[in-house]
Amino acid sequence: MRRLITLLVAASSAVLISSSALAATDHAKAISCSASGAAATCTVTRTMHHPNVIRVHATARPNQMAGVTWSMTCTKGKDVDSTSGSFTARTPIRHRLRPSDRHSGSCLVSATVTLAKTGHLRAWLTKQR
Image (tube, rainbow, N blue to C red; front, side, top):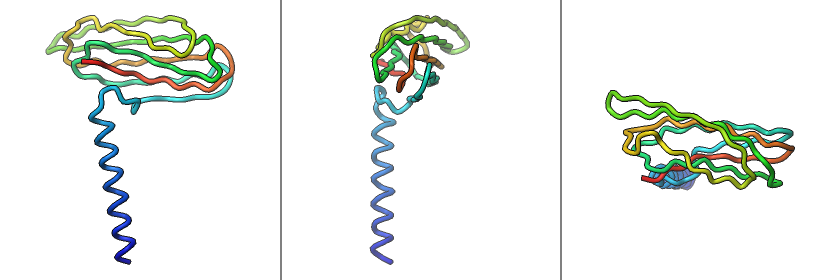
């Protein structure tokens, strides 16, 4: 029984440590989505605090054309500004989205990626300060 408790404590500690490491890393791929099939689609949404550079990323197997639509609502104090757009690119995608105010307090960013053909899709958002 004592050994089981020791194993459970060790396992929960490892989970907490790895979760903390992911949360502390702004560029971690912790907020992501994946989909498979014909015209696979996934949407990823993330709130980012004090972003200077925001990127949408996508990979596919096999590599192919993908459509991306995105929207961003940024706030700083009482000021709120929204932008959106769309583009088509070949995977792998690493596309920069520019906040309307480079010194925003926080931005809610959402991106939807849709594959042109059948495949496996993974998408995520990253930021840099």
